[in-house]
Length: 186
Image (tube, rainbow, N blue to C red; front, top):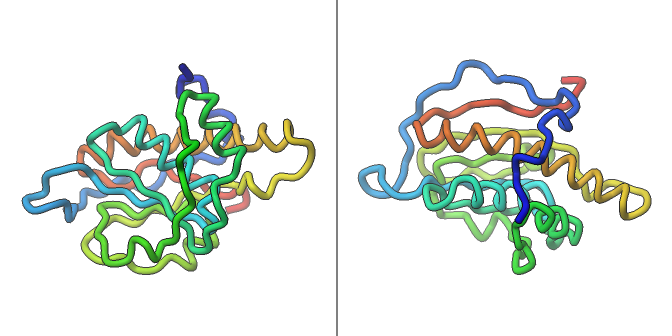
C-alpha cells in the first residue's frame, strides 16, 4: 500500500508559502454545525488537480470530511491521474469528471479552487463557506514521453498532498487559511 508521506513537499520547488494569519470562520455545516466538513475542489477540467485533492482529502480526512471535485469545463479523468494515485494506494479507477453545475444549490464549508482559470470562472455557491485558492501547475498540459509526463503528475500530487495535510487539521479546528501555493512569480 502506498504512503502519502513518501511524497516530498520539497518537490513543490519552493512554491508553498504561508498565508496571512488563519482566521476562524463559522461554518455552515448541517443543522447545529455537526456532520462532516464539506469541501469542493474546483479546477477547469476536473481531470487532474481537483481529482487529486478530492482523493487525498478522502484518504487523510476520513469520515470527518465529505470531499468533492468539479470542473468549470470537465474533460474526463486523466489516466495519469489514476496512475499517480494508484502509486500511493488510492484506487481512483471509478472516478468521473464532474461539472460545477452538478453542485449548484448545494452548500459547502470550503470551496477551494486549484487553478487560476477556475478561480476566475468559479460560480458562487450558497451558504456560508470559506473560499480558498491553491494554484498548481496543470499536469495534463505536460508534454513529452509518458514517463516525463507521469513525473509531472507525481510532482503535482506531492504539492496537493502537502496542502491538504495541514488543511485537514486546520479545518477540523474551525480555522480557515493555512498554506497556499502560488506561482513562482507571484
